[in-house]
Picture 1 (spheres, one colour):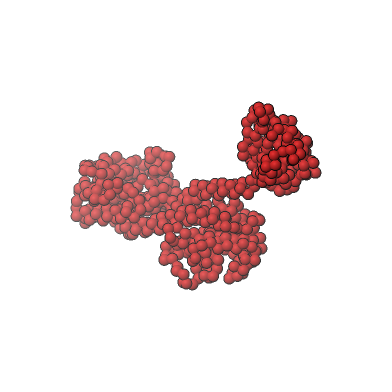
Picture 2: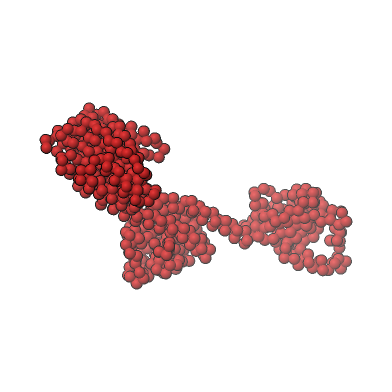
Length: 576
């Protein structure tokens, strides 16, 4: 078909090709080599809303509504490509007609009379017997599909960010706040995260039909910060089983209120809450259960006020995926917190509950478990008075964390006390303790510092199994670290544990400690020991309890590991 044939009466053209062109649902326009429109089909005329009389014979820049780079003020039609560059006639003239390079599936955004559309357009050169006739441009309304793709990309981006932003710590409240920060304002104008109080207390979870449910609010975020809807963070919330929160939790599926009428009706059990929601402008609410590993932990309530769209099924699927990920992170934090608390309780129960005070020695001690974001270790200490009038000061640290480390720590403490009271020498006690550790997991080891002190002579015999050296504060305030030959860690193999004897000055303060006090990320341990010496010098030795507190305040804040500290001040001995 020649260019001229396109303009001839239909009787002289191929009727099948005419029908194919005119009835195609794809909008098409044929432009000659000068980019003047020569023929359009009905789909194209419907797309731009112009009759043939205002299109034929004109270039795109000359026809109202046909222009892509330019537009008429009387019929505002604005075009731009998806990558932000201007679409103009040169693309067709130079690329398509001039070089014969087709344009395929290029997306453009079209705003016409305030309505946004996304079109996919393609153009290719038309020739006949080697002669260039012009170009045929085809347009497909891609709006719905483009919106679906955009929404899918946004959902994937949100879930990807959830993977990196939610669950960064093993703290329940912090994890819930991370979920709230991610959801607002992208998914909701307001979100609350409420966990079953039994979950937080480590109690048995309620069953269906057990009456009212107790929730504890752990996170809350609202774009309007001045708004208060009855409950705040840390409040205990008791709700009937007919409430939306309870229904979502007990049935294990989301609850949805799509309009203000449903919001008011579904919260009829708590009319003051319903009234506050409506006063806030909330018009749609989604309550999503937080389920992880078959356990329903609580619910997250999403609501919209400024967002005009009500929650739909696509939102339910997205929030469901997000809630599932967040629930696993919250459950990880819950399980960790439970084990952490159990380990702390076990460890404290295995440490000495009462330190005896004896002539010639004054004792003060502190044990600080690691912060909630770290694991409990196996730090321990003991003070063991002997029938000979001597006293044993011992401190140790089991490698590893959790209940296993705490249990081994208790075994070491019990074994040490038994062997010391039997009169075993320090070197023999260390070898026995090493055997105890070796019976456990190959990856477990322990350090230990054993001090046998005679109050009458003020002589102290030290034996170490890879432990940090004791610090001695002299009466004048200077501090030195006693050089104790270090044997191998307990449990790693046969080793000698040589002893060293030192005479302690009267009114001196001996400090035994674990590495959590002086080891910090990014800091050399020598720096931590220097800080310890400085703190011991600066503190008052008149009150050992106050000195303990000042050492922990200066060196133990936000500790990443357990800390055990044992201070002993020598006084005048008493004859046996």
